[in-house]
Amino acid sequence: RGGSLNAFTGEEVTCFLAKVSGEHLDTAIDLLSDMVLNASLNKSDVDRERTVIIEEIKMYQDLPNHHVHDILGELMWPEHPLGMSIAGSIESVSSISRESLSDYKNKNYISKNMAVVICGNLGKLDIQGRVKKIFGACPKKEDIVSDDFKNSQSGPRIRILNKGTAQSHLAIGLHSFGRQHKDRYALNLLHIILGANMSSRLFESVREQKGLAYEIATEVKRYKETGAFVVHAGTEHKKVKEAVSVIIKELRKIKELAVTKDELRRAKEFFKVQLLMALEDTVEHMLWLGEGMISFGKLPDKKEIIKKVEAITEDDITRVSNAIFKSQNLNLALIGALNENEQKDIEKELGQL
Image (cartoon, rainbow, N blue to C red; front, side, top):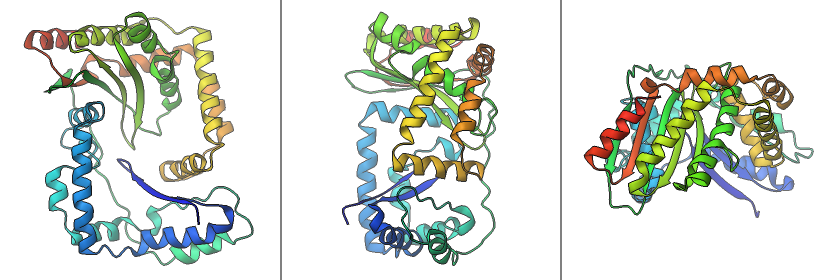
């Protein structure tokens, strides 16, 4: 039919998706729902896929800019599912049986645990009737209760994987708040100001002024009850200490000095334009709606979101910065080469936030 079929897994959500022309919508619904509800999970297929995933794990372990985030996750959420790699380990993938996959699917793939989202040229097809007919037969079981994370960190943590890479890759993670927190949009703007684009503070200071890195950026991770603000960069081995020092300096600066009205205005405009441009794509719009349904139990309203973003003040940015950017909240994962003295200097630097 000339369309595409795909799936992805996050820490809390699995998504199966298809994109087709409007005239083939019924075919896409049939195929996608059959895969999700009636997958046979033949043992031979599971064994074949097992070897593919093990090779995928090895591939990511050979990509330090990716693997450093797995190390950071283990550091931030120890002994908790959020701290485990989504792909798993070679040991865990090797031990998964066809029966355990089937049990997991039957437990989780239930109607009250799903959101079905369709976006685009829907034509005259009775979408609701079609979806209810297909998914109405799903078992209606008890809600699945996840293990909430309780942060007990009391000081900075650091974990280093010494490896013969051409460059050191670092990721600094700070515990933040969950996806429904009242300050989630202020956190978005903080991310934009510090590291979301080529006009951000960290890009300017770390790359443009100091020449310490080619890649330097921030990201925000949001989960049900917790989250993280992450700074990641790649730099020369001998420049790791200076790069960490500049990053910590910028985090301290935004805590102590209020952002300017113009900087906040530009961040708001960047947020709005990025949101509106993303929603022009049917797949992005579909994912946005699905995330709203899964996370909040209702469809998101872009006008309401923009209104909340517009209401954020300079004081809000300062308040959120001080709530998150604290030494006892800080974690550093590093892949590269670092001697004992350099590690001690970096640990001292992390204690100054």
